[in-house]
Length: 206
Image 1: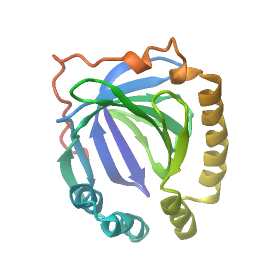
Image 2: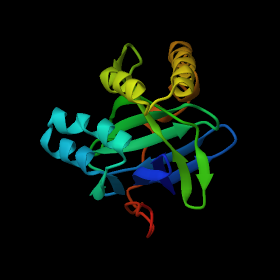
Image 3: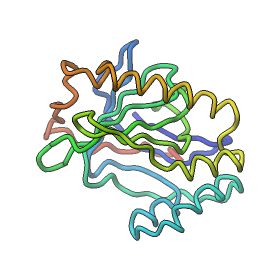
Image 4: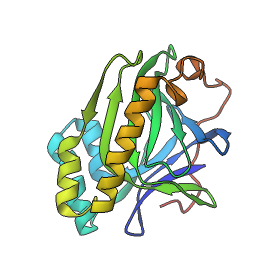
């Protein structure tokens, strides 16, 4: 299936994913190096060059509606994503592609998923929480982008209220070791199947 980030009716990013599990508790998907994706040119350039100035241009581009989608491929890590229905976040586990070692947990704050014929749509609300593999610590990421997005209207007042509530829920999951963070969830030792082919975007995704 395809996860798309959609802003004001236009696709901001798209990633081809494999469905691992789909229940009333959560949609679980995965991708690995070679998976097809699309993103704004500024995002792809910032990944290639590490230029933070280019990365920060993404938000003004959103406001102006001037972004350009370009193709790229997922690199370096294996991703396992847990997205509960109605949730304003997803929990992402990143694994080393060679040894399949859990590198970090990454909570992405985003709008609830809207199912589509090819997957689901959401929108990344710019704020993230990076959590140590053993859950011993965590830190906020991209708070500057989140605040800029709030000032420029990319993130509206309702989005911000929902993010605050979702953050409290996520921190409780971590502290209580529940959901994908539970010791018996199997997430920390999950493995992708080497026979799975790289995921491909359908024609017309963007």
